[in-house]
Structure formats: structure tokens, C-alpha cells
Length: 348
Ligand code: SAH
Image (cartoon, helix red, strand yellow):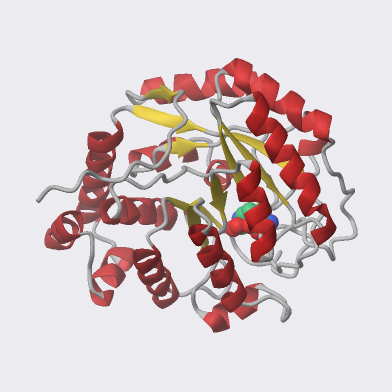
């Protein structure tokens, strides 16, 4: 079955059965070959450098009600916060001093009236740190609000599609949310010129291998610049809180598959992975991921940004030291560049 890995590496594509075979294989030698080839491709493009993004968890206030997410609006047990403009600027300042050149503003989905406030924040970050990329991960908005964010100076947007199967999507979200609207958002973002990221939770309740194959095929067509994948991790105060966590093995296997499909994509080794295993981040990098997102959120707010149970928490400065040590141990280092997506050079 090694030929599947070779085909994927050379043509960046497999048929459905090929993807399914890689996702379900229990052949340890094949899986190690998949991982090694993905790691080799990643280092051939990016060297031994791993990009870092400073994550700022802007708010846990949310108008949406996703069944998996701990900050859904129906979770009344959660104290809510919105960082002040000043707190965000201070977090960026601290991050910039540590060396970060990308800031990711992530959060729950604020009421629509807040769009101009968000755009103002983006414009101020853009004006003060012109050498930095600004990424937003703030969920679903009408196109005109995305346009406002883009015109204010945001460069990138992360919005996982979560599931490309409408029936499965409906198991994860309330009726007022739809796969169609999620895809509309992604298309708008791309048309507006954002570097766009999408992806899924691995092992979300009700997800089958056939669903994941559908997700792979969607990503193959959409060709995002960034691919975000993390294991589902239950949160006790949500409707899906009794389901088991997703698998680390399947998550890292997907990093490898996407690396072979998209040698140049920016693929983070996600926090959720690290929350399930102390070496999760390293396992992701060894499977072909090339980005990590250390947390710059002020400590008082961070403890209430609870997407799922057991989220790993580290102090930013200390976290960077630990990360560098962890990376050095496997022959890598932090790359402090902005780390924009670079189009592959086309050879004739
Ligand atoms: N509201 C925004 C950003 C915050 S959530 C949005 O939905 O895009 C960011 C990501 O966290 C989501 O895309 C989702 O995939 C992930 N997430 C939420 N709840 C989770 C859980 N219980 N386990 C694992 N990942 C989760």
C-alpha cells in the first residue's frame, strides 16, 4: 500500500478508496511511511523552522450555539468577557516584544453591531505594527462585515467548515446555522482577498470515515492556504459533552495526508492536540504540521475561554521557552517570520 503514499505525494490526489484506505489502515509500517514522507515534504518547503502565531482570545461572548463548543450562548454557567481595546493592544505589544509577527484574534461571535468596533481594533493594530500579519477567527458574519475587517487591514481568516456533510453538520449545530451559510462565508472571505483557512474537528460526534473523505474532497477543491484540524474534546456543559474525545492518531494522520496534498499549506499543530497529550504539538510537527499558536491572552480572561475541557494553559514568555526547547529536541526551531502563504513556483 506504499504506492498510495507515493501517489499522493506525486499527484497530490487519491480517489475515495485511496483516502479511505489511508484513514483506516492499521499497518504500522505504512503509517510510519506516510508520516515520514509528510515530514520530509514539509521540511523540503519550510526547512526546520516552525512559524508561531500569537493567539489573542478576544471574547467568549457568542451569538451562536454550536453543540460542541463551551462558549455557546446557551452555556449560562460561563462568566463572559470582551477584552478592552487597551487589553488587546497590550497583548500585541507584549507579543511583539517576544518576537511575534502574526496576531490571531479569535473569539465567540459578537453581536453584529460590534463589527465596526472590531474593524477599529484591526485598523489600530495595523497602524501600530505594520510589520505584522493580522488573522481573524471570529466566525460567521455577513459579507459586508468581512469587507469592513478586510479594509481595516486584516490579512487572513480562519473558519473551519466543521463538516461538509449537511446531515452531520446538522448534528453539530442548531437549526439556525447551516452548511450553506458556512460555505458562503468561506467564499466571501476568499473573494475579499483573505488568506483563508478551513478544516474540521477530528472525531466530532457522529463523524464517520466517509464524512472525513467528503471533507478532504471539499478541501481539495477549495484549496485553502491554511488547514486547521484538531481533535474534538468534550466540554461538560454542552449537549455533546458525553461523547469521547477524537483520536490523536487520526488527527496527525490527517496532517500528513493534507501535507502531501498541499506541500505549501500552513498547517498548525493545534492546541486541542496538546491538550490531549503533553507531546501532542511535537507529534503534529513530526506528521507534517508547520505552525503553532501560543497564547497571548491576558491570564484573567484566558481561564474563561473554555471551548473544551482541559485546555492547556501556559504563560506566553515561559511557553515560548518551552516551545523552543521542545522543538530543538526534534531538530526544529521557531521561525519568527510573518509566515505568509507562498504560492508554489510553477515549473513548466
Ligand atoms: N467562533 C469562531 C472561533 C472560535 S471556535 C468559530 O467558530 O470559528 C474555534 C474552533 O475551535 C472551532 O472552529 C472549532 O473547530 C474548535 N472547537 C470548538 N469547540 C471545540 C471542542 N469541543 N473540541 C475541539 N475543538 C473545538
